[in-house]
Amino acid sequence: MPLSISSGRAAHTGPAGRADQAGNSVWALAAICAAMFMVTLDGVALNLALPSIQRQFHGTLSQLEWVVTAYTLPLASLLLTTGALGDRWGARRLFIGSILAFAFTSLCCALSPSLHGLIVCRILQGIAAAGLLPMVLSLVAKSWPDKASRARVVNTLATTGGMAMVIGPFGGGLMTQVFGWPSIFLINLPIGLLGAWFAYRHLRETPRRVHPLDLPGVGVGSLALTALMAGLIESNTLGRTHPLVLTLVAAGVLGLIAFIRIEQRVEHPMLPLAIFRNRTFSAAAAGGFAFQFSCYGLLFMLALFVQRSWKVTPLHAGTLQLPFAIALILTTMVLNPRLLQRGPRWMLWMGAVWALLGGVIALWISTPATWPIFVLGTVLIAIGTGIYSPTLNVVATTSVDPAYAGLASGVYNTSRQIGMAMGIAILGSLVGGAMPELIGLRIGIMLIIACMVGVVVLALRYID
Image (cartoon, rainbow, N blue to C red; front, side):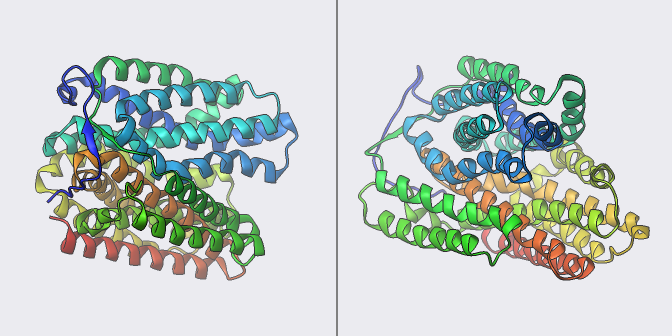
């Protein structure tokens, strides 16, 4: 049953006072897909432009890392806050403001006169993305109330993200080579403006909850997540035992404890802790963590492994991972529409089983001669994650009261971002650390297998 949290009264806006008819408009879906495509494309295309950025500004490796980190930190740290704000201010309103801000800050990135200026613009771009990402699932949950249509919409979003992942590396490299690195940011301008226009014209405003903003919760929660994410990100370069990393992680954990204490005591908490008494939502959030930890951690770990152990070029390493991206997008485009009627529980455990099988096969990766095993294992993992990841998105937002869809999306996406950071930090260190690469790879794959087993258990026990 959906969770109902009675904290504050609802105020309705818009001509009809509700988010009706959005599901009947292809342009409403186009607006949301534009946001998903833009945010995903920006991340994967930037990696190909970093060398050109370094050459133009004569930047150091540390500065290049901050071009990426400056975006990731505010994105991961503010998702919880922006998710709650969307429920208060209106998901459509925050979506339009954030997509316009993302387009504008992308333009600022392209026009940056220095590397330091680019880093500042990336921080602002990350803040805009933090306002945009939770609103994607929130608008889907509030605008497509029918479960079957909502599942199809979420699968379309997953397909859109998959297309961006496939197009991004090639398109980013091509645009950088032909037009220069600013073009990877300029492409966001027309996409963002079109998305904002479609949203303004075809998305209805959602109901809003009106009560005082939990400023202590917002402040402490954001700072705690910033410290935790900064520690996880910096562990990739400084090492997990570096004093700064340990200090940041400890500050993040203590801050989260303080945040929980605040939320237990304030009258109108930003994060009503009752949401976690909903076992279905909690299972979805844990599954989202496992997905990001496994999927993104695996890709990062394998990229390191083949370059260090097999001595291949970055381009060759990217080519080896191309079947993963293709299998992921084909799964969401071709296979999932035929499986949606089986229900979320079936899709979750079946997808996890496919990914589990791929992980077992990947344990046999060793020398360059085992590249067919590499491809087969990663393709099976892509099929599995392509089945269960969109399903998790649906479960996370349908298991709570629609008035809290923004908050649920913020919590769920925060869990995913922490999982991604931990996956990259932990699995990357296993291959890039002191132990032999092959041993580290197999330990990392066993951790991924454990995550898949966890998803199966969660699906069978807590998902209807």
